[in-house]
Length: 272
Image 1 (cartoon, rainbow, N blue to C red):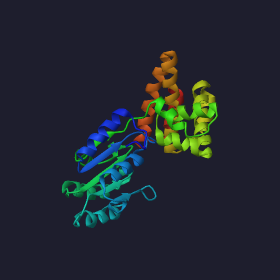
Image 2 (spheres, rainbow, N blue to C red):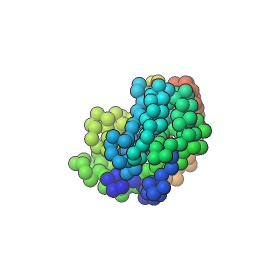
Image 3 (tube, rainbow, N blue to C red):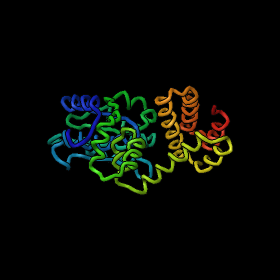
Image 4 (tube, one colour):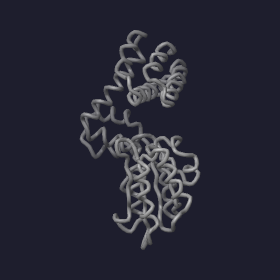
């Protein structure tokens, strides 16, 4: 387990899992923390060969019941060695697909191991969560982040920006270092968030016009929250702490399928 940079506390949990692997494992963590990479690493450690690893990935944002049902034959056949089933972004399973998976988890087969990854565990059935060992993958520290970035030739400004943008999420850090277009898009969100926090009500209304969809609004709010936390830790700014609570509330409402534009407009009136 040396090929990936993993938080020390998380690595201990993963090592313990490999010594006595559960029938089902649920990996959770922030977007960009590298859940997929860790799942594949664990699968390599558990399985006899690549041929005994099956991966289910969302297609057009969904894992259908038909695709989960294909696992029945694979897991019920005679196994010469360990078989590992990875379900990436498991929360993208339809309700029917989740119920189909639940039946598989309720009837464990020897030498078959499921590894599920999700950034939104609450969107999985509670019965699925209860039947899987859960490991929360923590962000790496700044030293590890700098170690990862040492593999890339970045100027000092981009180096510092990448560290801030990724905030200890190794997969995100790698993408920022390798994808110029992606980096520029993320830097644009930071610029908008900084402007939003520093300008007046009219300026804030101008900024939020860009963020009409749910995913974009959540990304924007996350970056605003990150800047506020940085300000609070650096300056012990009381208003920053108060505003963080407002941002958290708005994010929760949008995550619960609230209308993004409506809640962003409400946010403008609530900031101190």
